[in-house]
Amino acid sequence: MGFVGAFEVDGELIGTIRLVPMGHGLTLTDQLVEQLGDAAPQVPGTRWEVGRLVLAEAHRTDVDALRRCLFLSLDYASRQTEVHHLFASCSHVLSRLYRRFAFSPFAANVPLHGTAKSYTLIHGRAHDVLQALGRGRAASTTLQ
Image 1 (tube, rainbow, N blue to C red):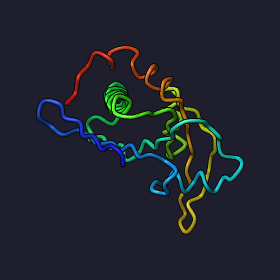
Image 2: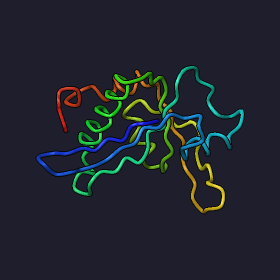
Image 3: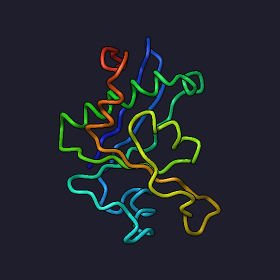
Image 4: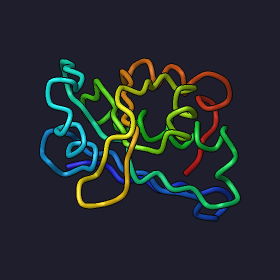
């Protein structure tokens, strides 16, 4: 139903990402958004969760590597199917980072029932996110 990508630089695997369509109850973000009820954003079109983004420790502080990985993933998904809106659940600190890429928080401290964890939920229009990610070197850099 979704896409899983892996990123390699000079023969070294540096990360992975998963994009899953929302509305099927398959994602953490689906579960957390459901808890919000009417307070959740009502957006037309397809909704996708960006999740399971993992970068090797040596690349975690490299914002350009994150930008390139997200750009390539979203660009690929957009070429395969309709992607109108992107959602994610993350820590408050990461939500600030994703603002650079046209995501906006819409709920903070959303608890995951049955755990001590809470999340910030973010949203971005796919077109705006791709445009923000495509600025600079991301559009011209190719990772495999």
